[in-house]
Amino acid sequence: MAKYQRILLKVSGEVLAGKSTFGIDPEKVAALCEEVAEVARAGVQIGLVVGGGNFFRGVAAAAKMMDRVAADHMGMLATVINALAMQDALEKSGIPTRVMTAIQMHSVAEPYIRRRAIRHLEKGRIVVFAAGTSNPYFSTDTAATLRGLEIHAQLVAKATRVDGVYDKDPLTNPDAVKFGEIGYSEVLTRNLRVMDASAVAMCRDNQLPIMVFNLNVRGNIMRMAMGEPIGTLIHAEPHAGAGTSS
Image (cartoon, rainbow, N blue to C red; front, side, top):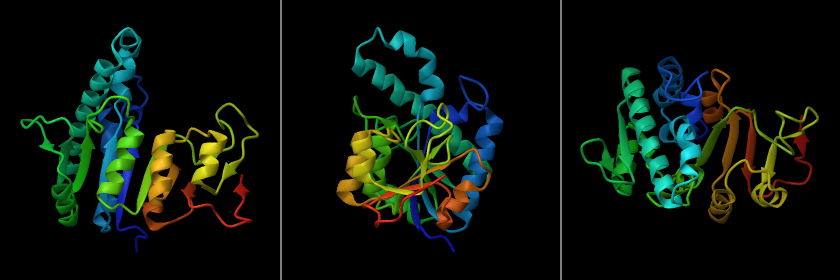
């Protein structure tokens, strides 16, 4: 039986590009959505937030010359493209899915209305939240945390390319040490950058746990939902002796 009944899953846009650096890899999206669908079939209610990096990174150089607000709105629109791709793949996996956008575009998706989103979840539908918060200067990490709090999720699960939170970048430091669990304040004090500081602080202030885990291992989304210790749990300050694990 799943440990969590309602989860907010945050996935980076780059994941959808697969081995490419730009765009959407249909096979990668289909494989990811089949995993998410398996968790939904197990009775877990899932809200999804997908980044837009697979599109927006491609225009990032040009965006540096742009007004920040305009560039951020471009990034938000990129998340809508990804959300529609996820919806298509999830429904092909047999799971009814709704895309809700913070920027209204009625011909494409539903506007984000909190009570309607919760109702969709209660009916067994996956809800993909797109267009961030509709506000510039806020990342998709912050949008994921906000949506997680609004829908009363029990966990924000951040899917990454590493298997948890380390004391330094494990991709460039072979001696990096992984945390099995860690407190919100320590993440902020150490400036570990696993999520935006504003997102971590919001979770801390509202006691919403964060799980950071490796998305590239098949079955990890289900393991996370079942409560298996597959990554790093960020929550209220852990008891003395909780320590780290390599």
